[in-house]
Image 1 (cartoon, rainbow, N blue to C red):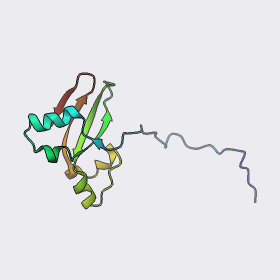
Image 2: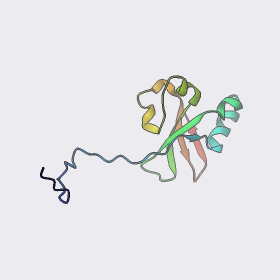
Image 3: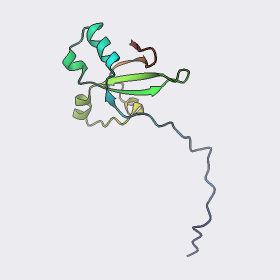
Image 4: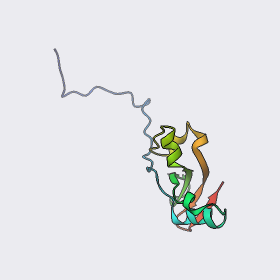
Length: 110
């Protein structure tokens, strides 16, 4: 055995692309939930049981894109949602998408 643990082997850095760390699922922000209940006239009990995953927008630091999904349906289908990327392969799980700007408290739901 010829172990040389003190020497590092060169890794191919071109292949490994570092992805930014995305936030985990959270409860809906107050502004998003309020818009869904008041403007869209959805059931408040349903709205506040939903979860929210987001990713930051490139041009605005305080703004983010979000996806809203039902955690009960995801659990029933055996889907574990860790972040934004988890829902890429399951577009039918996404109930609503939109943008949210924390600094101006503006919400745009599609």
